[in-house]
Length: 167
Image (cartoon, helix red, strand yellow):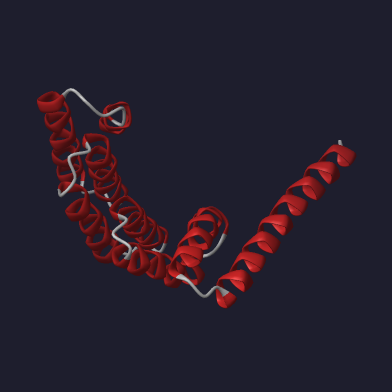
């Protein structure tokens, strides 16, 4: 039994260490990148690691950089994702005001799109913010907006997530 626990610990530690090394190497490459195209590609990859493995305090600056560059490059889905990442960090920090603020920024961007799935993902995130902070009436209202949007357009595979979270 002790041997199994030791193996589990070693395996977990090696995964965590490798993720941190990947994050550090991407940050180093980002520092020497010269074009916005290079930077946005690096930030896209880096931020997928940061949202899962780094502390919110160490991640927000990179998510904001991704939002700024995405805006400059007119990549609305990427900009929206950056705002959702920032919102997620504030959820982890238990900061309702900022979590909601950045979730609403993401929704503002997706509303300008005709992509229903894009809008559903952002509405679902705002619903999650409200649910996390026990604002259940607002969460239900947001999820119902997503369902209404889906029923008007009969599009968007993210509706399954909205229904799941509403349940």
